[in-house]
Length: 79
Image 1: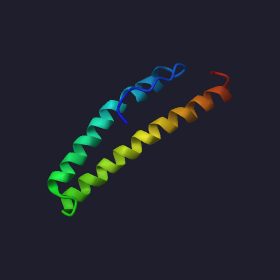
Image 2: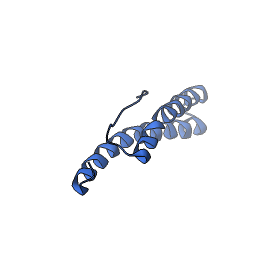
Image 3: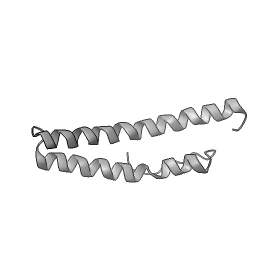
Image 4: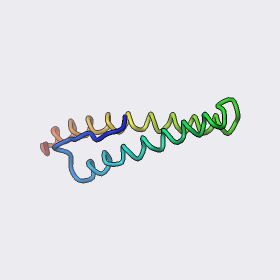
């Protein structure tokens, strides 16, 4: 999910959230690598794998949130 997603009507705060997606993607990859090194069958590896799954979930939610924000802005007459 790395890369930039442009939302031309997003405000500065929304663009700031989107700008962090590459960083979150990097964290997820690093955590997955760490989980593989530790072994997901170990307690530490399982915790790291769960954290990686959280960051994967977070990335999807960030995109969905931006879509909901766009819709909300239109309802408010800001879009």
